[in-house]
Length: 233
Image 1 (tube, rainbow, N blue to C red):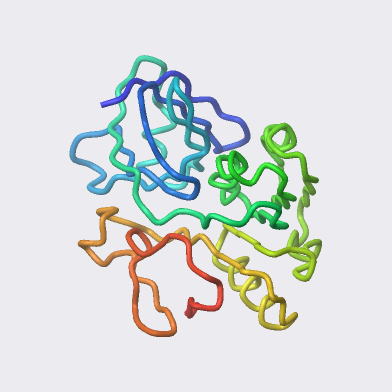
Image 2: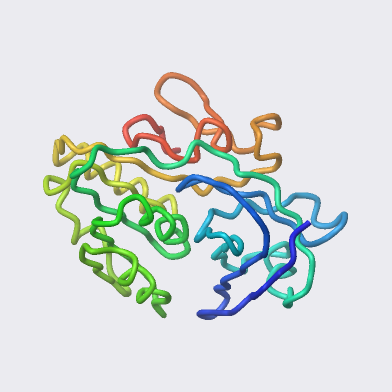
């Protein structure tokens, strides 16, 4: 169990939660989080937003009963965390040109990634009410471009980067895959999937992902995949 330090609403239905304790995790990995006993049955998978010696932070959107219960937590409340899970983002060569592309709550894992990708360019897309953009500006020596109500992917030149990492809703990730193929970019393009998960360890198959060679598990084999590997249905 971990103790909640803060749980702040940073935009309508968007919360930033911090729990005290000594935690580990690579960029792009996630924890299974719960603050209830029996109902809802499943924990919620939350990407690491930040991590330091004082604790771990998550950024999440209230979309159902589980996240509603999380949003009601106050400092001093207890939180159950299991993890870290997943394969995380790739290590890249020094000097590589990197773009991080996030849509909506998909920006969450990209913030922690800037610990390793310090000079990355960051593209953040919001349907409305942008949030925490100043945190990204402080975390990178690259540029931060914010798009509200449009298509942030239109601002990304796939030929300008060696590695592109994206996280967001499935329609955005489909568009990332399509742009990679249409532009014939030589960049390594990755998508971080937001599939529903039950166990986090690959035992239950709830998060099954169709890939070109076979079905894989978003929690154990992912959630990060090369864009061209995934078959979006």
